[in-house]
Length: 459
Image (cartoon, rainbow, N blue to C red; front, side, top):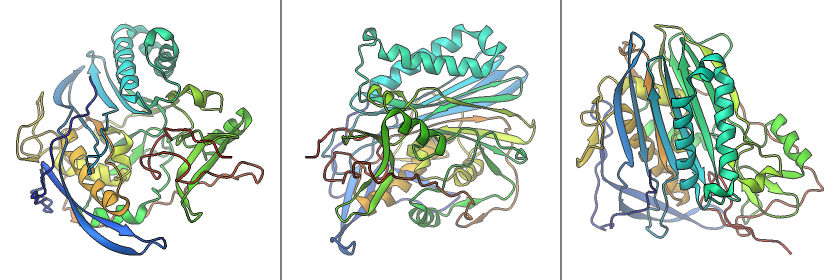
């Protein structure tokens, strides 16, 4: 798939009406955000309206898959991100796919970054698709090895001159899932994520729950405004492990390789955004993940392409569906909230579609559940844009439905309860070069950007 970098002209007269009703949620093709301007102590000094037209989906599909004697619905969507101000021409760097050979279902989710991230994800998508189609004996014999091998092959092939892609400062996250013999095998690199919805969570989850988003309060406010639906019978089980530089094992490997791990600071010295991987004596590359495909500049700093694999033995009849998504979704949805949203709408949505709906307003009546989840995520991004005046990220997901019927109960609206997981803080050595400020590096979104694109040396 090619890059998405076209933007429609914005009209100042745009006045979108976004439906807040749970049962009649609609998404117009225009947006309106109230941008807050703050002074140097963080006080809001002015608010102005910013209106814009939205990018259309790069890819939307809903298809019935035949897995043995099971009939399973799968859907996928990619929404290109964009600059609400129209000042930057943002390329779409997400890639999603799913496939079925009758004995297994395979899905892949890539989220690229850097100058040519869009080329990286398309290259990797082609490799994993071809490997799945041609390596049936391997995935049957050892599924985790199969997923590891094709991940490493993506990285190795990208680094070859024959790829025609410069991955010095470009790369991608990855989530791969293989559903075979009532088992979900998963592999991940970076912070894209796969989450299972089930009525019977396992005693030992395959992966730890992700640390709470640093913008928890912002998420709660957005969820409350969007009337988030809570179903106490549905549980979210994380299938992949987010790989962050501050995780103890990842941190030790990075320090051993000669890298440092620090957060950016703002002009007042306050820490901002995620922990990033830097060269010991330079403000580069600023990767917000400890594992990635590509990113050769990070390889010598302990950033690796080896995925973390997990295994989940399915509880037939209890496991409902799987969501694999880029951080365009997970930056504005917590696991439980995404699972509840999909559960509430999936059987209301249209199925068996091969192209995006050409409509003035997207709703469950005219599109699939993957598209609806991405549209909801984009609306929730408005809260971030209003507070921080940043770009809206690419948003993509794949949803595989194992159980067609909904878990029927009376649903109530509300803010999701707090999770118990807390983020870790690495020990930052006193002898390290001081953390760069947001004025000393170039990054589109210091809180969520995957990489610092320009290297600026400090005197």
